[in-house]
Image (cartoon, rainbow, N blue to C red; front, side):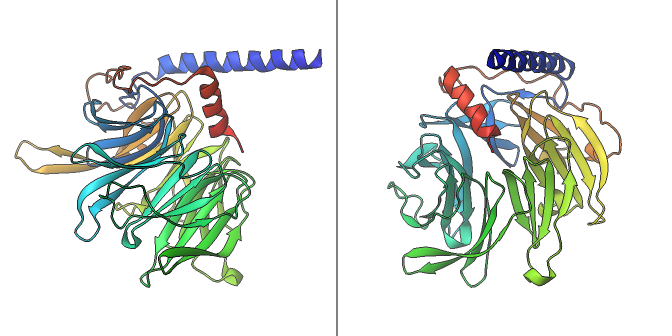
Length: 404
């Protein structure tokens, strides 16, 4: 009887949440000039005026951010595409671009974006869902991590070869799924790799080449998060992390352990899935943008020890999953190019929304500033690649994204 009562209360709470989200979806339906996707964006990168999206519809999508139209679909995975990355086709000359995708199907695929064709498929790259990809271009190295608690290293020296990638190293030290990766390459040919798991444990590895293989030596580990790390970025000696423990934390790593301060912790009212420290972008501005729940928050980080909350915006009607910088390029009447910084957000509400950075930095709630006069049309099921999740797979996706 107690279980039935508990289930009833849970169901009622879920119904109330669903209704609140439905009402909010109507209230903010034009905010941020939404582009409606066929599925949920699980990863996104922005290059020029295009967004490259890893979708739970088993496709990777190249999308025009101005029109909202799909430019190219990359089909072949048999499960949700969870992550994507890029590498130069010829690392020595920087010519052409290779798209790298991975999926629940545990494969890693390389695509020639110029010829729009599949180059290679590495099957069973992990023994469970692959969650992250990270490329170290100067080392010709791809790093992958997954729900199998392992990190694997792949040779990218000949990405145009139509053969499966060669595994050149692996690390099996985490006791929980490895959710996030970041790294910095060193001038001596080594690298420092950061890995974070769903328990909130962050490990730092020194990667060195040993013949044809790579070895990872554990340097240190950090335990300042209480649970899952959702996003991790490294730059200028600082490690930025967003966590399900309702915090964003900033840890200075390039000092001896004896001199390292307690991480700066920025509290949020709910789990933080996404961060964008603008000082790590080419803007080099002292601002931090976070996504917790369906809300964007903007902080002035000019005083490193005392962040100032500038803005709070109800941006989506479901959880925000990614925040990216878009250097929007337009052509003026005189033929010259104008570059303006915008912010792109993705969400479990299956939309991409666009925000002028100057408005987000204004200490008040910004109004919607459409890029186009109308909301972009929804993407058809044909454009989605004809893939649909079953009800069980939808539940699995939700559990996977919310689990600690």
